[in-house]
Amino acid sequence: MMADQRLAALRRRLAGEDAEVALVTTPANMRYLTGFEGVFDEGVNAACVVSAEVARFYTDSRYEVAAREAATGTPWAVHIQKDSMYVEICAQLMSEGVGTLAIESSVPYGRFKFISEQFQGRVLASEHWVEGLRQVKEAVEIEAIEAAAGLTDRAFDHILAFLRPGIREVDVAIELESFMRRNGSEGVAFDSIVAGGPNSARPHAGVSRREVSAGEFLMMDFGARVAGYCADMTRTVVMGVASDRHRTVYEAVLAANEAGIAGAKAGMAGCDIDAIARDLLGRAGLAESFGHGLGHGLGLAVHELPGVGRLSREPVRSGSVITIEPGVYLPGFGGVRIEDLVLVEDGGVRLLSHAPKELIEIQ
Image (cartoon, rainbow, N blue to C red; front, side, top):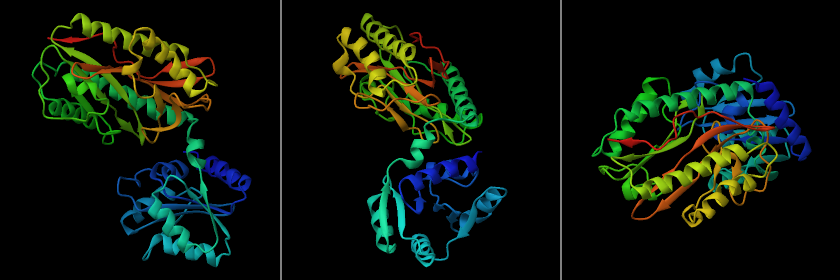
């Protein structure tokens, strides 16, 4: 991983903002900056301190061995907390004469307030300093995302043989997640959504114990994680025989998905990419049933910059990985979402999701 280049980029931002030290505590940002493998998990207790001269990684004794091994040969010095990590960090910085500390604006308010009270100098909020760096993916990052996307494609192929009318949502989710774990996924990228019938009209329905009957949509939103990097894909099928209404809604969403993929390219504002698909659904009389944004950035986190929605004014940069996921949700009937991962390039996008998208009927 390119820890030197990433640190250099953050240090340039520090200099440009007239700040002396950046304190980074968001796990995805820490993993990006350090390039450490095998250190970060859901419960990690850690922090990164970066200045023009130092790169320190703080953690506790539970992660000491892993952190010291991961830091070998990198610019990072590992420090093990004795009592309270943020108290110790602030005390060390003040003893070194540091007068300005930048803290991520995305951290919980309680953490921001506590650190601000401990550090007796000027505190400022760093707005997307590291997240901005993470937008443009390096070759090694793209390789990991492609591997995660490929495993997610394989999980969909696997689940098609498992599905049948009357199956429970929870059993589908377990089978998807088990397949991905057995075949190399580090857990899952996010909590899967498996929603049938009227549940599929709720974009983030989660998973229930409900049986999915013939004549209903089944929407599956899931993703593998490889080397820390996420995949995210949604496919919707019909249990039994599709009705004319099923086909009409499905074909409208598929057309919007394909139009978004065909029209997206580097330099476009996220809102303009969103508008391609949204306008198409509007001409089909379905715009009011598409309430969320067309997509989002993806990498070490399943939702990251850039935004691809109606309010996303920033240009999407070449090298970003985004989702294209139009959806139509009809309460009482069901919903369809079709989501693909794409790598944004100067002249268009490269598709990273390859699972079939034609309407599939599960007999």
